[in-house]
Image 1: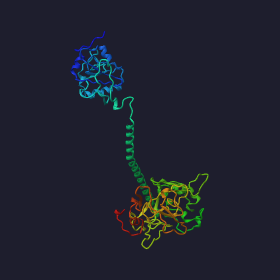
Image 2: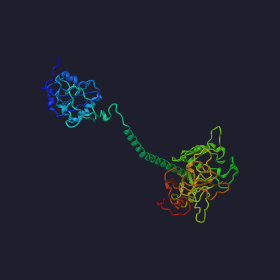
Image 3: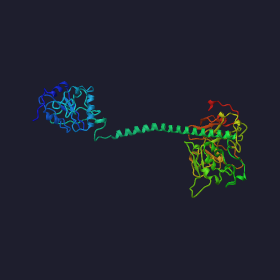
Image 4: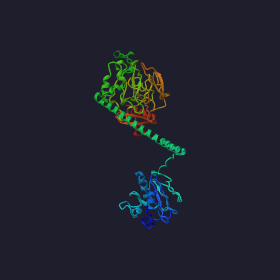
Amino acid sequence: MDQPVQNGSWLAKAEAKHRRTDGRICTPSAGLLFGVASGQAPLSRAAAQDGLSSQGKGRFSPGEAPQMACYAGRSVPSGEREILDCCFRRNDPGGQAVRHFPPHPAEPNGSAGLSHQGRGVLFPPHPAKPLPCGRGWGRPLPQRGEADRTAACVGRTRGGGRGRGSAFTLVELLVVIAIIGILIALLLPAVQAAREAARRAQCVNNLKQIALAMHTYHDSRRALPFGAIRGPGSVDPSRQDVTTGRWYDDFTWLSQIGPQIEQLAWYNLFNFKVTVSHPANYEARKTKIELFGCPSDGIAENEFYPPNNPQLWARVRTNYVVNWGNTGYSQKDQNSTWRFGGAPFTFARSIKFDHITDGLSRTLMLSETLTPKGADWEGPLGETIIATGGQTFDSYVTPNSEVPDAVNRRCPVDIRFMNRCIVVADITNDIPLNHHCAARSNHPGGVNAAFCDGSVTFFSNNIDLQVWRALTTSQGGETIGTGEY
């Protein structure tokens, strides 16, 4: 027969030692924090043990508010014990309540506190604060009568999250979506700017590599490569192609530096005894050399048709062009005050560094252009492998100018070139004075350009026109300060 737990026993002593004026009770979902009271109706040991079970059969003694709370760990998952541990540490950080409770008299080897098989702890509820459930704060339960056998945990469950069966409201969901949208709007420009900075850095590296290749070529040949192998009006019957050997369908500087950029296999594909437009050079013209493409724009395929419909004019367009001087593709004086001041590249001959009297660090060698992305022939712009003018840039206008480029025969259908290109004439035996191609890029605010000494600088679209023209002359004699660009 069950023996009652008397007030003078260890339970009463523990209760008296940690008595509080109010009581709180909290139950995790699988465990139980059970209120026990002192007074006129003590519980039997069997009833106490039954009340401390994990089945939620806890009860109060009649007419008494709970003065203490304890946890029964029998058949309770370990995760629920963590909840109790958290609750206990918040209410008694020093752990004094546990240390002062005597062991269960029937369990001499059990742990301290009112427990079942040593898995329980006994502690008084906090006098001023609601007893927390898990890591959140619960709200106190009202004192109830004898009929109330259990109490549920009100408030937040373990981990500070929502209880079972609850969900986000529509307003909360919309707020979260709005916050995410704002964060994306703030971060996206920064991500794009970082990517563009990386692309621009790669573009600078490409220009440095090409400038270094030009120096290596000069060291071995004692001069820079020709800008175009022939000039206006030149006809060479020995270099016949499918169009009777026109000079502007022939080789440019691009094909000459293959060995210097470690592309000897590509260089050996060319047959230099015929024009570059000859069918014999079909495979070489289609070869894409990554070094010649700016990451912000890229190499473009031109007249690449399916194998069952071969087109021998197929070639690639690239992004880097050589300095042709300050007066346009003709390299002639525009008027009495706007005279040609020399350039590092020209028609039918090679220029030595000794002829660049303005200084290698004050004369541009290379810059950028854009490549049209149309499938058919898109005109000279970006066409660096043949001599229609797209292999060059000049300082007729400033970088990325709104003034249209004036080119031979055709303008691109690419929308980026809308209102930025006009056709001036068909260059056969002469080149119109106003035939010109500006330095252009997709970099925000300007273009990269390499000097003849190999250094690379970013030039703003707003650079003074006269300063820009002075930088493209090789024998102009202009005085330019470093702070002017």
